[in-house]
Amino acid sequence: MTRAALTSPLCKCGCGLPAPRREKGGSGRAFNKYVAGHYHLDTSTVPKCACGCGRDVSRAGRKWRKWAKGCHLRKHGFDAKEAKINERLLRVYGITRAAYEQLLSNQGGSCAICGIRSPGKDRTMWCVDHDHDTGDVRGLLCGQCNAGIGNLRDDPIIIERAAQYVRKGGFF
Image (cartoon, rainbow, N blue to C red):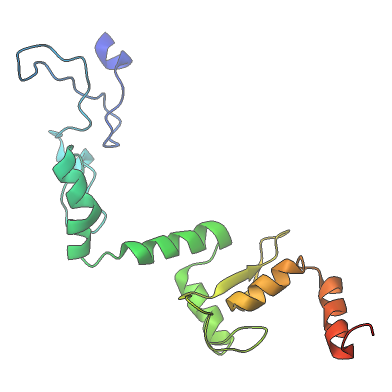
């Protein structure tokens, strides 16, 4: 390996090879910048598009980024909103979308506390109720029930006192 290869930054396409340098600019001046990506001679190391179309993802430039972000992915049925929801469910709660749907069907398609069939006003997803200490998922709640137990600090003693207060009609 040459000395320049050891000191140059790595290619941003993820291949692990040193990034190639541009030799000359449009006006004939030498540039000291690195190209964001490059075409590989060995096609087995070229990262491929996640949609499965087989297109290389080692291209650089504005047109490529626009193509990769929207046009191409929508053409292949990729839904960015759905992917973001799936990613958040897995990252925050450790469940997949299939587990979320299974939990909802086990609850009869309604809130685990009040039994309402709608996740709440202006909501499309149910709130995933989880234990903040252990991270275990307890169930799916509507927005109001989730806010209610959250405001009562997820403490069963406080929740029971609140229930007794409501049953008695206050302390009068």
